[in-house]
Image (cartoon, rainbow, N blue to C red; front, side, top):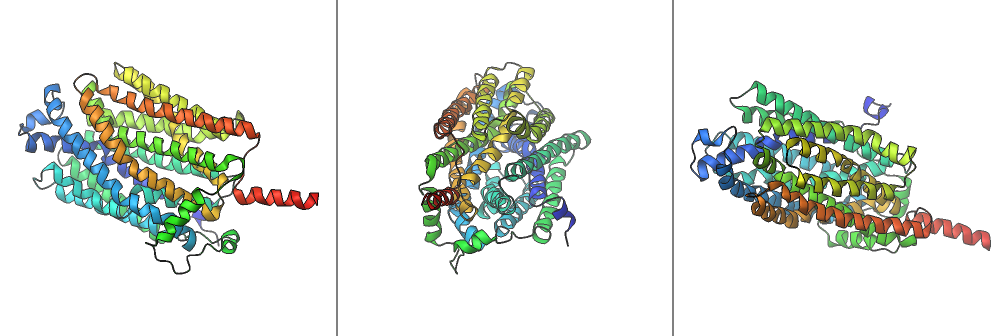
Length: 471
C-alpha cells in the first residue's frame, strides 16, 4: 500500500529542508559568537566593545583572526569528505544502498550542534570551536549528503521528471534556509539572554527529528532491472577498495558519442566553480556586510530571508519558464544563469549602500537553478548504473575546492577589509566569467552536433538498431 510520502512523491526533501533550516538558523549566530569570543578572549576587549555594533577600528583588529578560524573550519570540514567521496559513488552504485551515507552525515551534524551547546557555556578560546565540525566532516559532510541524494533521485525518476524533482530538492532546501533566517530573526528580537543556547538547542532538536525521519521513514531505493542486468553489484567488495576509485575514473573518462565526454568534463568544471564561489562567499558574507554597512545579526538574517524567498520563487518557476515556456535548451539556460551571476558579482562589488547591495544580490538569484540544471544534464549523459560514480567523483572535486577557495577568499578579504570589503566579490566575478566561457563552449558543441546527446548505452543502442535496419 502506498504511504502518504509515496503518494506525494516525498523522499529526501524533508531531510534537506530541516538540515538547511539548521544551517541558516545558526549561520550568523555562530560567526557572531566567534567574533565576540575573539574580541573578548583573544584581544582582551571589554564586553561592551564587543557586542551590538562593533566599531570599525575594533573590527579591523578582530575580523582577520576570526576569518582565519572560519578558514580552518572550512578546511577541516572538507578533508575527510574529500577522501570518502572517492569511494562513495562506486560503492553505492554496486550495493544500491544510498541511505547509509545520507544517515551518517545527518547524525554527524546532530553531534556538531550538541558540541556547540556544550562549548558555549565554557570560557573556551575560539580556536577550539574547530573541533565541533569534526563529527560532520568524519561522517561525509554535505558532499556525502548531496551525492547520495542526487543518486537517490536518479534511481527513482526518469528523464521526463528528473530535472523537476531535482529542482524540488533545491526548493526544499531553500525553504529551509528561508525559514531558518526568519526564525533566527524572531529569536533575536524575542530573546536577548542565552540566545546562542536557544538557537543551537533548536538546531539540535531539529536534527534529532531529521535522524528519525531518515532512519525510519526514508525507504531505500529499489534495484531496477537495468542495474540488475548491468553486473554492477559489489560482489563483496569492501568500502575502502581501490577498485571503486578505478571504476569512477573509468566511467568518467569513457568515450561518449557527440563529444559527450568533453561536455561531461566541462559540466563538472562548472560545478566546481559554483561550489568554489559558494564556499568562499558564504564564509565571508556576514563579515563583509558587517564591515561595510555595520549590519547586525538581525539585519543579515532579514536580507538572507528575502534572498531565500526570492530563490524559492525562482526555483519553482525558473526551469518551467525558461525550458518549457521559452523553449530554451538546458545548456543555454546554464549559460544564461552564469551571465547573471557574473553581472551580479560585479554590481555587488561596486555597491555603495544596502539598497544597491540588495538589488545586485537579487539580480543573481538565478544561481539556484545552476546545480539542478547541471546535475540533470549530467544524468542524460550517463546511464543510471554509473551515475553514482560520476556524482561521487564530482563531489570529490567539490570537496577539495575549499582548499583553494577558502585561503584565496581569506587573503583577498584581509587585503580589502581596510578599503572596501565588498571588493571581495570581484574575485567571484572572475570565477563566474570562467564558468560562463565553459558553458558557451558546451552550447557550441551542442549546436555543432545539432541534437541532444544521449547516454552512451542509449546512443549505441540507436546505432545498433540503425545498422540492423540497413543490413
